[in-house]
Length: 77
Image (cartoon, rainbow, N blue to C red; front, side, top):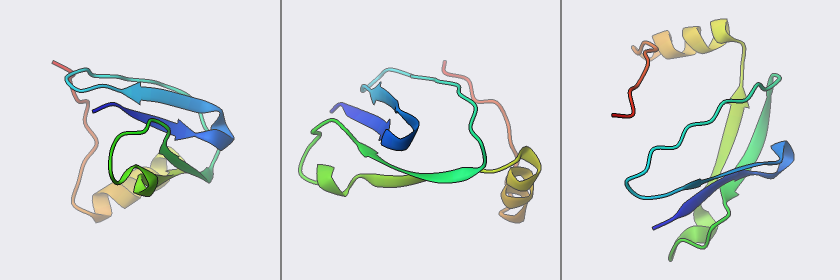
């Protein structure tokens, strides 16, 4: 099933295909944005909504550590 990660306010969209690793990089200012799946993908397509929140790296580190996590690189292999 194909999905499409779309954030209209950022003019950004990337497709997600099964068994394929996608990556993307872009720089954001602090803020929050709404997004949704832009590819008709099945029964619950209309419910595939999400939010993006951009924060400074130090704020993200605090948030991550408060939940017992740590940042690490993830390999696509």
